Image (cartoon, rainbow, N blue to C red; front, side, top):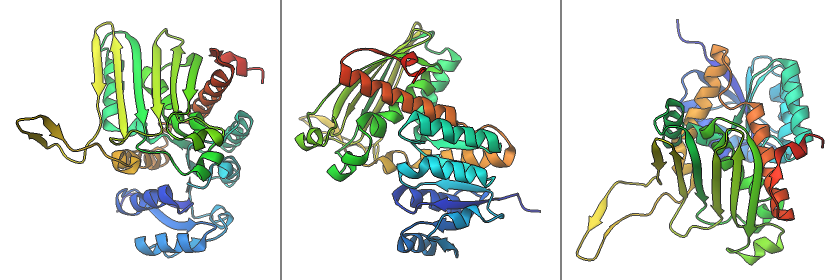
Length: 341
């Protein structure tokens, strides 16, 4: 008798949706992708044909109405996430949703209440938790390999900024980009942040400033357990996708560097050099995207808790909001300020 497979529907056949679809079809044996929905019918059909999926829908509600579909992967635009989570929960289906859940805490709380009421599982797409390097840092901290953690430094710099049209609707650098680093900081330290101080500037492209955003930032986090963390971000690192972490503690330190397309080094009479790091996040984090989706499928089939919860998704958005307020008001912001809002 073959193993049980989870019937999955996917909403959104854009860049990340296509990647998840491929993993569900070809690399996760316990999953069966049965339908793809996208308001752009051609996008859904192209993705489905490439993967041998026979069913596509323009209206995602058809997926929610199908009793045979047990779980839904949401890769739609951010502004639709909260509504789709609520509707999917009401349909009694388990949910994987790309980050962020929503742009406001009010919307997030309504979505999480719907999930709780329906009794379904929800996993948020913070794929970097599943990266082998960052997972090793987490294990070192948990196991006490570096003693008590004192400092955490996260470097997260993109090879180049996204289009200005995207910048205008992204919700800002802290919500769009740093949100991954906020989640990573909580994941690595295993505690909650109490205070945020953020400073930002426009150093890459004046058009980004004209669009009301920043492209360069440093954020300091103070955790409840006393750990201090710094995050530095840039929209443009000319040498590639710069993703590094160092954790320092009472008994030592652990650091992970960038990933490269190859491990070759060239040595001559002038210098020792190597090729540049990966230039694209989907190349750098290919395996982590696979691992996060496999973890979601396993959580549903094995009835375990998802590894990235709705609470985690909310916490990252809260930190983004605190960082934005800190930057705008030029002061440290306590997370408890948001308790009464």
